[in-house]
Amino acid sequence: MRHLGLKARMAVVGSALFAFYAVAAVVVMGVFGWPLWLVLLGSVAFVGVQYKLGKWMALRSVGAEDLPEDRYSDIHRRVASLADDMGIEKPRLMIARMGVPNAFAVGRKGNGTVVVSEELLQRLEPDEVEGVLAHELAHIRNRDVVMMVLGQGVASIVAIVAQWAVLLTGDNDIADFFLAIVVGQITQMLVMLFVFAISRYREYVADSDAASEIGSGEPLASALEKIQRGSERASESEVDAQVNALCIFGEKRGLARLLATHPPVEKRIERLRR
Image (cartoon, rainbow, N blue to C red; front, side):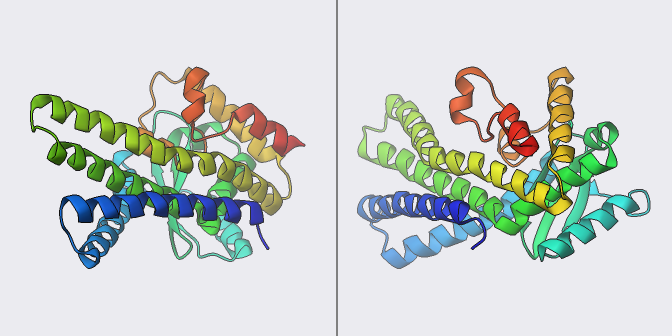
């Protein structure tokens, strides 16, 4: 079975998210008096809309546009070949100015989109670009992008329920308002810790898949080195936090690494070259 470790982790994270959701549903039925069918219907609608809206907002936030096939025919050809080898449909290819060399994927097997930054295409060699694209296609094939988006949806639901529970059970004064904000933020962060855990592992899996598809880990390792150097020299990234979690590079340092969505790039490069 392909990527048993990733599937097992996704199952554990999915179970944890369902548990958080179940607690939130019980709170809603108890505090608001909603029937179970209305809670389920509202939750499905909320997550579904957030999934669609999240994909649209991710593309809009970086100003992504379709990658012209007449100017980048080689990239379209390489992606079509990789997608065919991976057994998925060729995703929509888009380009954006992100301020740093980067790339990310959204969507699922039959409806995926890969976005690359102008800075990435300017700095990387063709074989390095292919390594990055193979990495993003692996995310789509492994369905871990969907898990990330659904995780963010459940975290938002739980946070909203926690906020309203504080507001409706308190004295409705200004202190309760600020307490509700704090509780909502903490609750959302606790839920997202589970998503962050799988996020780091999925990067290793996608790196490994990319190396297998193109026959070597060196192109992607070299690409990550250039991406890291380009990110360090850039004055400011134009990618927001939620989109950054989907990107191929999103390293944090110091204590921020505890909540990082990506493993240290040095370890990724080491694994690719090993």
